[in-house]
Length: 229
Image (cartoon, rainbow, N blue to C red; front, side):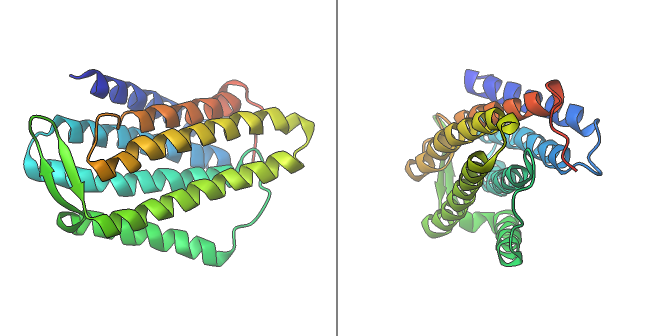
């Protein structure tokens, strides 16, 4: 197994472990635990999906997984957005029109990527290394939606930091810094490089989101100071 896939597998297993540990603490009445468990579980699925793509087992499977990876990534960004809304406390209520936009985006792209993957991924090459060619317009719309959601999450964290009591400022600073770094590096390696069919750094996205998740895990599980209901 390549170093790239070993790093992806490691990131995936760490995320799965954090997901199980936080889920075991209870998610029914705790939105932070609920969204964090989902976030880390989908990060686990994302890493596995990228491993299958990198292996290039056969043409059609690689093509399908290259399409499926994007609704999984969209779910990660959406769940992270909702996690940010509730962490470490809820500051605002998202208007229904925005929730509708988010839900429709998930539904549309999930259907499109799963059932029309041959449109979204119009060609793949398996040798000497895996190369994926995405349909430009639909991929660009997808990229725009993801960036808007990530920027919205960063803005919400800034607003919370500005209004937060001293007890929460350090936690918010840590999460904000991790989200900014994860957004920049993940967008570069797993969104923009795809325009140039470059998969050499697709492990960077899961590794940098792992930083976000581990900081949140430290605050939720290890430090145990967050208890949002």
